[in-house]
Amino acid sequence: MKMYRIVIIVLFTVFFGAAQAQQLSDSAQVSLLTCGAGNQLYSIFGHSAIRICDAENNIDMVFNYGTFDFSTPNFYLKFSRGTLMYMLSVNSFSDFLQSYKYENRSVYEQKLNITHAEKEKLFSLLLENCKPQNRNYRYDFFKDNCSTRIRDIFQQAVGERLRFSDKNTDGSMTFRQLIYPYLEKMQWSKFGIDILLGMPTDVRASNADYMFLPAELFKTVDTATIDGKRFAAPPKTLYQAHEVQTSSLPSPNLVFYIFMIAVILLSLSELYFLLKNRKFNTKIFDRMFFTCLALVSVIIVLMWIFSLHYPVRDNLNILWLNPLYLYIFIKLEKSNIYILAFCIVCNLTVLCGHSLLPQYFNSAFFAIITASTIRLIMIAAKTRVINKRHIRL
Image (cartoon, rainbow, N blue to C red; front, top):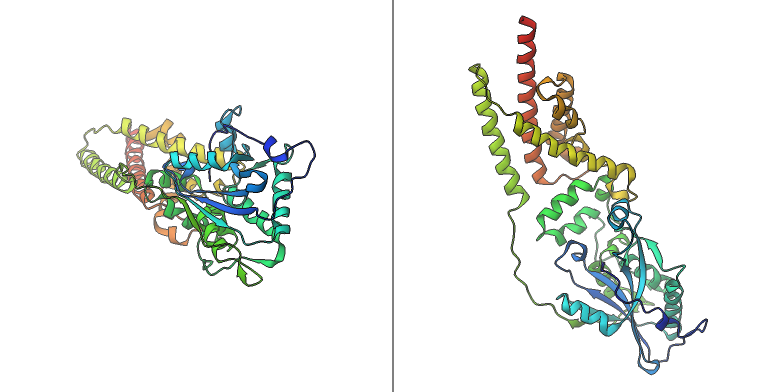
């Protein structure tokens, strides 16, 4: 999904005059453009656009549903809340292709085998969408994006004659599973996404839903038919990206399982000193650890309540990223034993019952949950010891 700052929006080239309707020549071609993944998270899933090429009328333009304006006031707040407006923009094909060459992203073209009347209808629908009152829409990564809009407008222009084959899908994949292959080289992004996305991401995607990904739209268009004949010509490569070696960071699994082992060793040392009735101060570590977990839990709660992005709702990560950690941070060894027990039970629910829960948990989470559970048990043990001393006094 191409999301970049709008440099040029050449809507005036679309209308060719006030209210005049533009007619395409008989030689006009309509194509689906599919662009490969970029190196940034916003571009990792690729992009789709529509090309209208009519040499007789000197038209070669690209209709792009995936643009937004970085200069929008309160950009990041609107983006996180799901209120940032995306829009349909129009660029010359040469500029469009050059931008992807510059970013070293592959571009493929599939020319559509549709009638002249259907080309005219599609062009008319695109022109209508380009009008200022129509071009903006509220982006939804899974349900309403640059690919799903193209899927829908193709269906609208061609009608029931267009048949999308389901042989490319088996209907068993969830939305989360569909995006995972794109995140293999971005494990920390995958880790963060798994924290923020809740149960709606683990719903099975329908055959039509698969096309929220440009690569899936590409495959579906390649096998689609009109009256039993191919909907699109075999794909043509307009630009092939070259391989770029990227530096890799240690994976979240490696980092957090090492962290878990360190916490286990720390807790065993503390237990040894506790049994010897000697002091072993872990307050600084516990406060820092539970502060980090509490801050993430606050983000989850705020996203759940205030964001219009439905995939961030019903997030069961709230079980182990517990808002009650704010209380534990403040009280620590004076915490209520029942609150500590409740947090431990929530953690054990995820650790032992995650396969029964309707949400997928990143494997790195289990290292963090294990570490926090051990620390909660140690805090509970010290709390009981302190309480017993107070009773004796």
